[in-house]
Image (tube, rainbow, N blue to C red; front, top):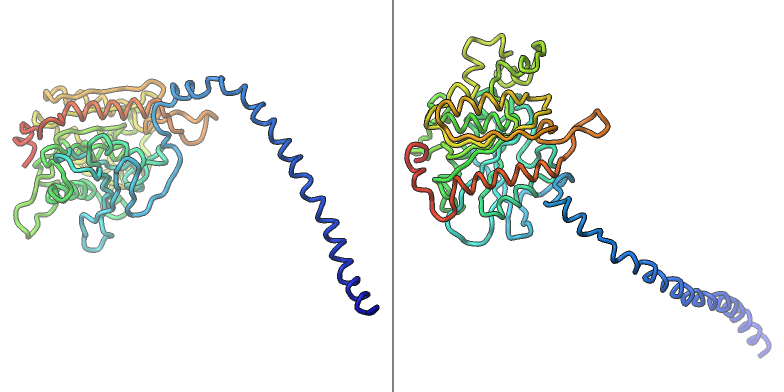
Length: 380
C-alpha cells in the first residue's frame, strides 16, 4: 500500500503543479475584457466627424486603378457576365479572342460598344489599359448601363503589319453581327472606342466603311455582315502617322512604333504607305459621328492629332466634338506627383470622360428604338 501511495503521489504531484500553473491563466480574461470596454467609448466621439460625406463628394465612381486579374469567364455584381470568345483563327497565328460583357437580364437587343486597346500597336490586351488597373471593372460598369461591350484582341505589330489590326477588328465586328441573336445585339448600333493606338484603330474602322483594301478576306460561307460602325470615340489617338514627331518639333528617330506597325519608318516608306494608315485619308460625308477626347499636356501624342481629326470631320460635315482636358497627359491620366515616372490614374478626368462618352452614345443610339436611320449607308 505504501508503494502504491508513493506511485500515486509521483504521478499526482506533476499534475497538481501543472494545474496550479494553469489556474492563473483565466484571470487575465476579465482584465482583457475590462480593457476592451473603454475602446467603444473612445471611438464614440469620432462618429459625428463628417468623413463619409467628404469621401462621397470627391470619389464619384469606383476606383479602377487597382490591378486585377480575371479568369476567362466571370460574373460581376449587377448581373453582368464577362465571357471570352474566339472570333477568328488565322492560319499561323494565335486564336483571336474578344471579351464580351453583357447583362444577364433579358431585354430588347442592345447597342454594342467595341473597345480597342492601346499599347503602341506592339503590346496590350483586351483586359488592360493604362492607367486603369481594373479595366474589366470599368467595362462592366458600362455594360450595366445597357450596352454590350466587346473588348477585342488583335494581332500586334510583332505578329503582322498594317492593315492586319484593322482587318482583325473588322472581323470581330462581323462575328458579333453574325451572332447578334445569340448575344442579343442590335446590329444597327455599333460604336468603336479606342485609346492611343486603339484610338487610331477605332478611327480607321469608323472612316473606312466599304473600303475594300481594308476589309477582311471574303469568307467561303457566302455574304458577310457589315464591318461598319455607326459611331466612334477616340481618346488621344494617333491620327497622322507622318507628323507624330514633328508635332512636337522633335527630330525623327531611327526607329519608332509607327515604323513597327507599317514595316518601315514613315519618312522612309513609299509616298502613300503612311497616308494609307491615316484616318485623315478616308474621312468623307458618310463617316459616322465622332467624340474625340485628349489632354492638352499629352507629351506622347500631341493634342494637334485630335485637332486635325476634328477639323477634317467638320470640313466633311460630319458631327464631331473635341473635348480637351487641361493639365491632363496621355491616356487621360495625370502627371506623376514626383515629377518623373509613369503617369497615374486620374479619377476626376476619367469620370468626366466616361460620362461624356455615355452621353454621346445615349444620344447617338436612343434606347427607345433600334435607330432605323442607321440601316442605310453605314449598316447592312
